[in-house]
Image 1 (cartoon, rainbow, N blue to C red):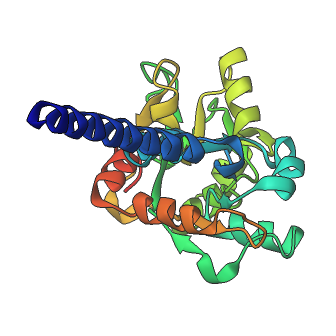
Image 2: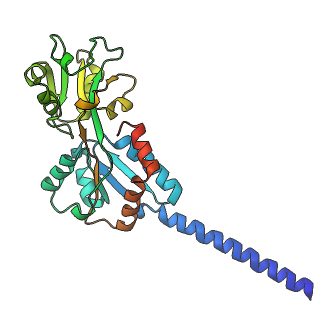
Image 3: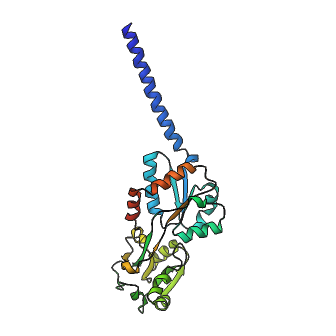
Length: 260
């Protein structure tokens, strides 16, 4: 009788154990369901730290995060359908987004993550010996300018402090709308010597750029905002991801990619 009772108890324990495990796997499976994925959209600049932290968040919570980054025209149609979060490459960039696409993001959820410093990208080995903003005014220096994508007016803000606007403007060989265009041209045509942009782009392009950092007194910073969308079906999970991005360890990931 004791043997039968003991076998029954063992059987109950096994059923309970496997039942519990099944429940755990079911919950994880439900979290990984494509319908429950947190969809994040934004420009290409912050894509590297966003992707890295999305992968970490998924490993730690079981909640899948899918980040799509690049020029807005490539993702805006889909974002209008399923975006849970929209981030910007600067504060003015996300503000422009809200003006151009009213009603998509919930302004009350807007959160500033971390600031990015601006520097000068030059060719590997710095053949033109560019060490300062003043060097960008020298004869023969060809500058590529991104007139948008979070960089609108960036070079002018820097040059204006030192009276260098005429000299730098004279050496701007080409202006484009997006960083993606600038990167493509930089890789294809070695005639461009410098690009005033976020330091973070150097960490994405270490094989084709060197970074000239500006002195502390000359540095310029722009923010990295993020907001939950009004139509998100995953508002609770989206809020969790923003909180995760604000953790000290997440800040360190952004710093690794060139943020302050």
